Image (tube, rainbow, N blue to C red; front, side, top):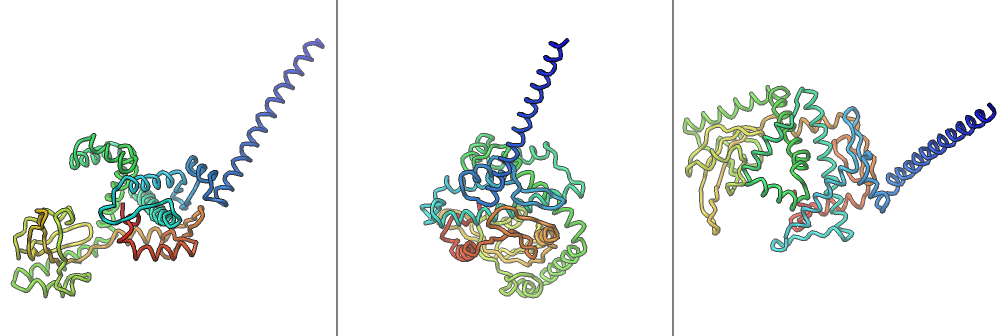
Amino acid sequence: MVKENKEDNEGRTKKVKISTIFLSTIIFLIFLFTILVVIFYKFEDNFVSDNLGKALPLPAVYIKDTGIISTNKVFDNLKSIKTFYKNQDFSSTGYRVDFQTKEGLMRLKIREKELINKMIEDKVIEDIAKEKGVRISDSLVDESVERKINEYGSDDFVRDNLENLYGWSLDDFKEKIVKPSLYKDELEDWVSENAYKEKNEKAKDEIEKAFQKIESGEDFESVAEDTSEGITSKNGGHLGLFKKEYIAAVLRKDVTSLNVDEVSGVLESKLGYHIIKLDDKNVDEEGEVIFDLSQIYVPKGSFAEWIGEKIKELEVKVLVKDYVWNQDTGMIEFSDSELMEFEKKSMKESVEDASLLPV
């Protein structure tokens, strides 16, 4: 009996020791994790914080009622941007890309700021779209990718280009580009049909009246000056010279089929309503057709303006260093004055610096 009690006590003692060791380990790990997180948020730009941010989904930005933008996704997307510039040959254009120097790192910081703002916009768009009942299925994403593959070439060609340009797999492309684009398209349609329905109907009525004036014999340039919106209205709607690929896809077929001095009917894009006139058409030294165009343009309600206002209404907390949230603009901005001044200076010089061109 005494022996049994002794064995029971030893068993309980072992269990207590194991429990104590386990609990102590958990407490130590929590303590260590807390210290690492403090290092990350307070002392960024060192080996520990960089690798912690890459490995763990720590909050970089918190959006109330929407969720977070995680540090590891920011690092992952920024890596793709660096891969893009690294694998491009800009020597023939005179552009320079060097993210190793102090100025280069500051340029990369500008790209990071733009990236995080885009990630915030994409997340808000997806959240609002889901509230409106929009659901993007995997099959819809696959269909969209299939169209892209058919447009640009074979499956292997697209995969190789994604890998070489961005370090992406096809699944990365679906998640980072295709799915956000589909959510945006669906929400744009909803905004057009609901938030800006009255304004868009008025814009359509205005452009149709302008077209009737042209058909009745009025001069295109004078109608453009009276009706068109934007800076081109001051010079009779003249837009300038365009290669085929630089004409908006939704307008391309109608515009490139015009004869010289011919005017299109009323054309619609996501931006608004257009009447296009082909002023001239020539072939350049490389054998490409150049279109000299004028237009009468009446804008629809702007989706960019609408989503921008929605973002301004949100409660956003920026948790990573170097950035602050500007409630008035609905965007993150640099908190460091040196970075702010460098950004202003760099924007003026962007024609000489490929690292500041759109990816």
